[in-house]
Image (cartoon, rainbow, N blue to C red):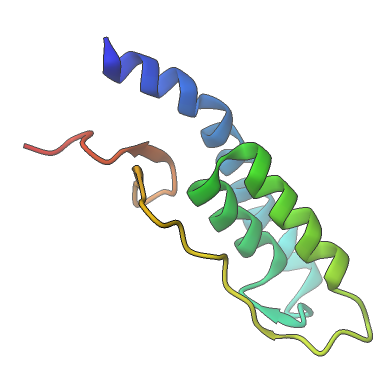
Length: 103
């Protein structure tokens, strides 16, 4: 029962991951390598949503995009680390419980 509840709670986060993965596969290559920051804004937002959830991760992504302008210095800008990670990501990037699929 707990696994089902966790899956339902992670559904919005995983739908956002799927949407961003689609963007990164289809639309992002059309722009080429133009981002001033590393990782790119879409990769940053994807990581932020995976680590922090849909609301906080999206807010971090919007803040990052707002900082990305022609006069930005750029550079390496990683997602702030989570103190105690409760979830892990699958090879595709979906977020699952840290205990899911183990043991």
